[in-house]
Figure 1 (tube, rainbow over the protein chains, first blue to last red):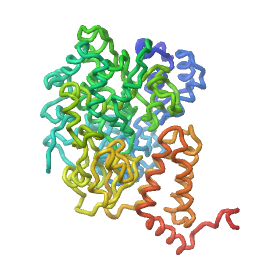
Figure 2 (figure 1 turned 180 degrees about the horizontal axis):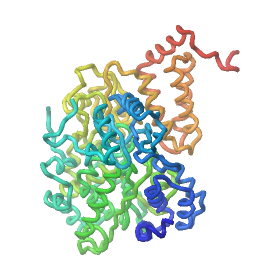
Figure 3 (figure 1 turned 45 degrees about the vertical axis):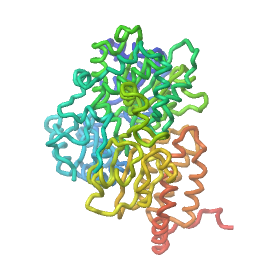
Figure 4 (figure 1 turned 30 degrees about the vertical axis):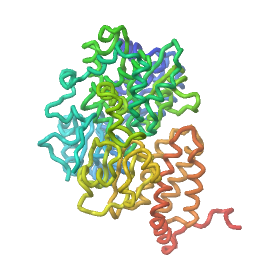
Length: 178
Length: 435
């Protein structure tokens, strides 16, 4: 039960809003953080906390693309396929990642490590092609870079190539894209 | 290349600037708040913003001061300010930089706006994917709270203003102000029918103002340096101040460029963004994010201000300029944007929900060399049945890639259809169309 394990956090979230239902998205995120996806029992529990009916929770949860209602891999690779990234090669990149992992967009590797999704714009159009893996952005991608990211994630669970706070013009000494 | 004084990006361009409270205060941060809080009448703050000519930087370009002025004067209950940080318009990535590199500039803007409209609570609705941005904002709000800028009795002025970060969860429509409010209330992000406008019936049905990140970030500068100073920049009287334009696509240096409004697209693309990649010719560009109709090389000398771009048959929108080089397939480009709109249509209005699917199907058929000449008329007919017939502006936005590419590059559509005819791949006419 979320209320047993995260009582303080849930109370903190509830304290921010004058109307309880506003806490729905933050609580769904909390549930997703626990399991990797939002289980039916978590939705039932959240409904109880916010004094909503389970369908009211479900109707909101189904609307948003970032809320997973079924399990995804440990690393959810979301590659932007919108026009601005497509102009600079995102389709090739999606093909490359798919080939490396042996899966198509929408699928998960048999070892449950990687899920690949082709998603719409993630607001990094000037540094495309790009992808988001779980919480982190990876930008200005090339095949080599992707290979390194996948290998690092497989080995250590994290990768130093993720982007920090976005800056343009770039600080001196960083590699610019010509 | 002409250089201009940066306003919004000024701090972050200094070497070693981290965006921390100490750094921000060192560059004169929170001085505007000190100047205003308890010393200037809130109505005069609104008047100053009105006089500055600041217009919304999120896409619609509505005058900010006028928007604030719509709030009921005599209402005694709570009011809210929502900062729209749901930056999801393809081609736009300016708010991300403003949030991640200089969060206190935004927070100060929010505090000034709250003071002007009499709001004691404000929510920054940030798109869910900006996990880093949300973290940075949370940290900055914590710093500001500890320093007495946020919370109860700010700077001993007796004013209480709270700022909270609220993460969205992946829905483009939540950048539309009423959908944002619905989402913030914990519901599906479906736009509301207007009127009533958020100014009277906004968050929890209370008077609410929704302003974009860049709009709010301008406020400390306007309060510090005056409305006349701001109004003298750019292309007065209708388009004042600078704008952070996001250049993407086939240019040498894609990125964010803060320039005064009123310079030409030619200058932005060829001088600031370094011109075309590999010296190729420019074929098309989008001036204001995915919702803006495509423009051609003939429009390169159009000025980057609201009116000039509207006269050219497009819109300045969110300031996302996407450049395409010679050889780009315009049918493919329009389809790619159409797929975005199809995916992001919220489903509330039938013309948009069903129409976006039909548009994508028809476009896919054309690009797969199964199209008929009649499809072009169908596309236009469909677009005319979507635009203007939906609750929010999404309907008008989603038809712009197709209508504008059909207007300027119709021959590319025809080429696909001729290829289908030559290969004898056309599907038979649907039943019922033969007279």
